[in-house]
Length: 234
Image (tube, rainbow, N blue to C red; front, side, top):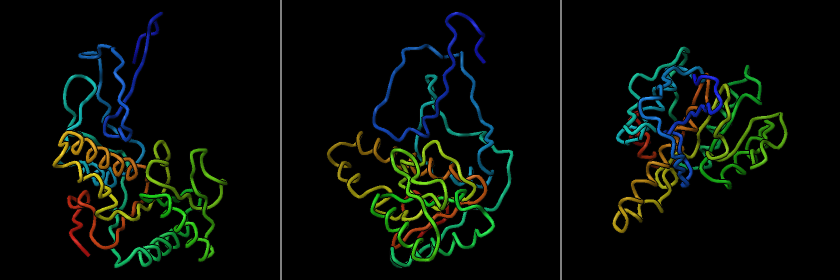
């Protein structure tokens, strides 16, 4: 896409996946010299559509001096619609996670992942899966501990990874976004907006790790980010 010359450079970015607070300005003028990539080969049209709806009501820049509304994004793959599941408690939601992993019995375990909001929740998922005889590997900053078994980790750990089947568990109000985010609403509206946007992007990143199948679950009240998907309560 960039002619091979002495000072050639090719940059690609997606502000919808901006999940860290640090933002870098490169000082490179790209206005009028960029192209928008709208075709996805990573995930199905159904999963992509759900992920896009998670970002509803949020503005993102297009790295070219304008705004990006995700209009026209599409996928070459087709599959089932993402599954939404609710539970009365985290303990019962863990049972739903086990049940879903078992239902994907024809998928290699290392092609299945469980994503949660916190490290403690990841540990509890690994423990519950092991108790039911399902091997699991926790993802750390150095990658997965072992290549075999279901991969389990926090949302941040899954950026850049891909799986055939994905469970995002614990998507409850107060966890996604974390309750501390709303403390900024009265004192610092700009930061409140930025933190909410980052939380949405984190859930978007997690959802788009799935290629073939996606299940999203919560206990108690579902995250406000799931309302566009039709999750309104238990």
